[in-house]
Image (cartoon, rainbow, N blue to C red; front, side):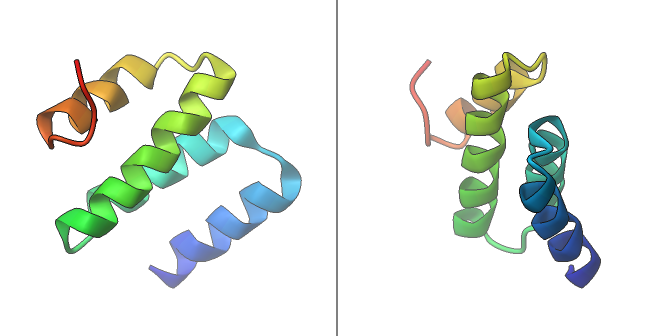
Length: 71
């Protein structure tokens, strides 16, 4: 997870918002508990919404399925 953390920090420093969508989604996929998964997934979704990213609908569906967002 250290490599992922380094990539997240670098993307934040560079303002690489599209990369942050993917990196936070990856962090959610790799999370070991539902709370961490929800945290990372929410971040991915927020960055996706800000960029009108094509993954926004998929990320929202994952949040809805986990009970963290309304349909």
